[in-house]
Figure 1 (spheres, rainbow, N blue to C red):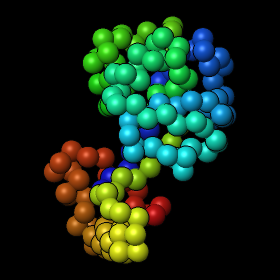
Figure 2 (figure 1 turned 120 degrees about the horizontal axis):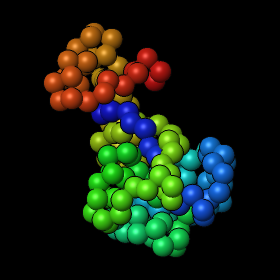
Figure 3 (figure 1 turned 120 degrees about the vertical axis):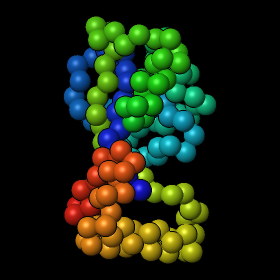
Figure 4 (figure 1 turned 90 degrees about the horizontal axis):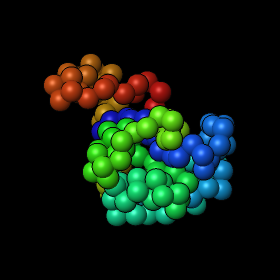
Length: 148
């Protein structure tokens, strides 16, 4: 459906000097249920699912976990919901990856076939220059489909 960057929110004192994805190695990463898994990370992490982004922000603020991972819009929304101002002296937000988002289907033989049909259809629409107007209409950034 679209491609988007994802980020981690963390407390600087707890993590220390930022070393890109290496800073996440073997650390606890909070996320909402089913949003992220080990495949989204370049290094091993311990994923802990929490119910809301606001809970994640509060756990980071209280140093009960290392990172909260989400897209930028959801991190900003979670900061508001947790009533936690983004103090650049205390906290940081860093981009750690980019991924494509698809409709959810079961990872069965039939589900994988549906994903392939979906991906093939998107590429076909992209090559026919019929897809970009749809993204523009709905205000979404147009992904670089040529990389897929």
